[in-house]
Length: 374
Image 1 (cartoon, rainbow, N blue to C red):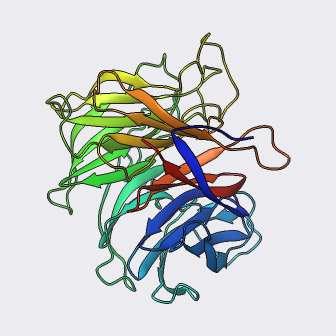
Image 2: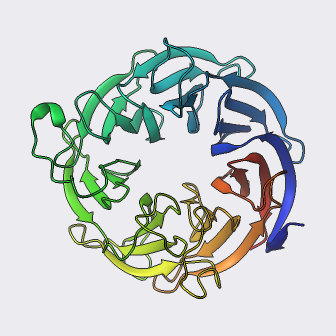
């Protein structure tokens, strides 16, 4: 049976597992983890009875496990995910018109070299993308203008030293993990970029055509988990500019205790400083190594006030209050049953709607619609 505190299950959607969920108006978009399932759109006007409107599929060897939508525009990623079964399919970002959500219509595809697109942010006009590009090592930052969604236009790109292989840059990472831009998120004229094992970067994008680094932090190798998401609080807390940084409990540099999240003080942007950690009480009681996907993954990019829902892999939905950024506290949780054939949940992503309802997707199977009672 699920375990819960200050939460209540509203409904459950039995669907293929997903990498991301997103709400726009009365539509829930589910980006699935594995082909042939690509993207599903649900009507959630009645959250107790979600109704499937349409499904998109894609070939084996690829996935579109991320989705963002605004109005009539939906964008999904295409990323290599195994051995492709077709020769005429490529990685990139695909743009759909969803004015009729029962019949999404592809209007463009921005193609990349290599594996394709991993994650991205989308503000209704610009997309801030983690992509593999010809001539570069790993994933870099690319900013796209979708003013005309049918004609995506690259505005700029940014990378860390050594990634531009075609430019004969010296490569300083031979004894370390390949660089990987993971998840750019915009707030105002800043782009907050997680860079996997290479830490985090703060970019000034007041001129979108020329992103400039203003801050960087890479934690000690004592912490072996990759940096997943940099989520900035829109208001000051205790007089400080605060950023929540989640590590993902995968791709560990060595066996380790489960990943957790951090609170950074970025009042001085050039010197991002960790001031607290966020963890599930009792999870790391002895500091011993645990299997991957036991700990932290992803905070909701949408939240209200100082209450932030997290997808915490095997620990389900975890809700933290960061009103005191020096002492975050857990205020609620919902741990769903493991999908059939599995021994534990694998909560992969979480978002909220304007009603305050939470949508939690399992990477193996299913979406739970949850009401917070906080």
